[in-house]
Length: 513
Image (tube, rainbow, N blue to C red):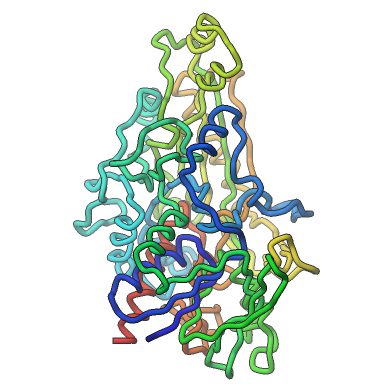
């Protein structure tokens, strides 16, 4: 039997566990989660959200804190069974081949020690495991014949003015790949809390694994891991943890230790694990643990097009249209971006109007007065090597060390953010929105898409983990989270970390057999 400890119960940890268990080989997996247990798809919670618009996840978010003015955490992460997949949007896009060659192509940042082609088969497996609907005929980036498990959601009537505007401006567009089970989705428009678990959630996936594999998979909630214990410089012995329900500490040994705690908690755990073998924290002899923090700055714009006599109102609560027009090698040096039209932003929310007692005539008048458009662009940010995640003083309500952030914005990024705001403004105007109705916003990056603090590299002089996401200088300690990405790219990181998780499970199992 091979024993495996997984720190974190989000998508990475869950997929590693699933892939190892399904091999049929003899694994005993123990998963530690700092937050509480949680079962998704509760109809009572869903009705409360539908009727009151009170989000059920607030109590699982980061506690209030004084944050770096250029980088936010509050509300971006969830501490609970399933982690942040309980509230993620479901956007599931592959990185592009050039994203793995940033340094070679631009002279900025770092290259990945693996290529797109090496990761492509694992992207395909991850797309199936996450129940993704997408356009299998769209070969940018290359799919090499792999098929999505579900067809893409069709463009909506609300998408039509945007499509017309993009075509007028000569901008490309495509279906948004979404982690939605197309056989289960009931299109209620309340996708931020799905009552039927149609959106992929690691919490739901874990519940299925626990039912199928029984005591082969143990999930310990309310159990933050405090340090990784080492036998020597190369060999991880296991972990020391705290049970926050009873205040008791403990330790556990294992053959393999996999840290899947997201960018911040993975980094902090390595830094906190000091010993005579690793004076500055595990993997930190070259000082790279915690450095190179990058996130996705977000620009957004909204506006209103007068008139809507057909009373077009979107029922789907998720995005169906994306544009990767600015996510190409041509724009890589200045900072690429992904543009999406928010699916559930309109002048009228029928369920709220009904709950508020608004009359039919008032609802009709509001709907017919105009169509509201809301666009979002996530922008590739370039690293500042001195951007850092560090250990703060004291612990938070989850029993984890507090987070300290040092963050500044690269001048290239500041320039391209202004450019992408203007791109969104052009799309809104081409869609018929009046100039005086358009509002724009430049946001700061946050913890949801943070990367690079334990980045992959060919040598420990340049990073923290190797091409197999094993911590340099160790035999059995891995980091499987956004932290290992050398760069952030233009698109959401979830599918890529899922692909890395599938790849890691295969590597561990191949070593066993």
